[in-house]
Length: 591
Image (tube, rainbow, N blue to C red; front, side, top):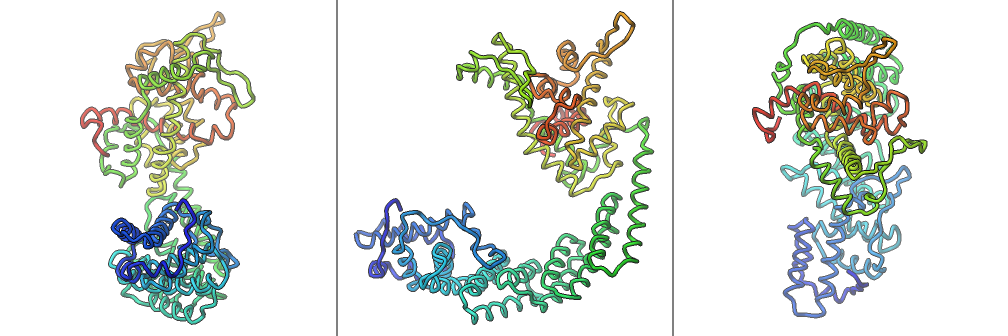
């Protein structure tokens, strides 16, 4: 469709009837291929343009679906009932192009063509006689799709989306008879206990969003679905259904449903074993009781329960004994892929370990960049802070430049790993299992973690797992630094100096990473050691120094650097287990 295409009704009449009247296909790819196949096989020059136009129209709708710029078709109107703005059709489409689509609508009985070609005209033209006619045809097509998909064994939920769009168009273009018919149909689906519960909920939503009305008659049906989900302990689905019922309610009904939702949170809290999870759910219940405005006794009762749970949780946390013994291999017990908290963290540690940047790869990329880009070879790389102050010396030799550039390559990959591995897996672990201190204790009980700092590791990792990266990252950085120091000292290295005044100061982190590199490589492995240097050297993130001296911007401390530091802390704690797993099963084994 690189040139304007004007298709007259006379030309469209040349298109083989079966391509427009078939009611069997609702797939635009099939329709497009049918048009293209007939275009390839025809020798009639006059038949070519209309077939090409139809194929390109299908292609346009397919591209729209792929990029979601046609989202209003399956979505919502704004608060005033107007369509959200959409990306227009190709610039070379003229009014003649839309009139050609209108001619197709009158020639076809295919529900897919009726619905989407009609909707295409509506969303682009917005008003006018052609637009109103297209809206009526689109509603007709969506009605057929609604019935077609409701009877589909696996895609019945799509039926509600088509019903919603039909209601939207009928309401906006004054098709009151269609609105009544669709509302009667949608209400009957919500009340039909033979339909899938999720489909019934979606139809209730379609009534509200499509016709922009509240229908109190669906509330009793939705409450039946809530009871069904409660029996299955499907709390999230039950809440979604209850909230939809509340949106259809008015007056005193709203207060009653708020109380019902609060009790639902109480029921879920009673089914949970983790105290912090109970506290969070009960606080939601308190908020809902307050909104209901008539439940002071219930609020006081739940508030006392919350205080008791918080007291017990704090008491257990503070009585944690760093001296207790714990075999780190026990951490493997009960882990089953990502179906347990242990499994999530072990999977995170192993996946991160396998994907960490290596020194060899980073140096090769650095050398390639220096050879490819002349500027990197001619001018040394320097690092400046957020105020423009230079924090590294200019690198003079090629070796210095390769090292600095390798850190640049490594930290870039570390930032990516923070976003695609660490953050998603930590979020999954927390949201699904709501871990408490007792769940995190096994992680920090390895012999390689200093006994006198196990409690600090516990606090820092728990905060990180809960998503408080801004706090957890800066807490973990000095703990990791001292972990390196203890590792070097246990291997016979020297970690402190004595001044003339007899003051014994420990060596800074960068000194340890340079002078004691061999011992750390032996204990940690090449990959973990290299990543540590990239994270803590001046030429890399310089993370420990910046966080310790308050030199981080909000972007640094809340960004990928801190997220990665939490994942790196988990890996260090589980490093013996991860190395043992890989040694026994190889890197291809899935946890």
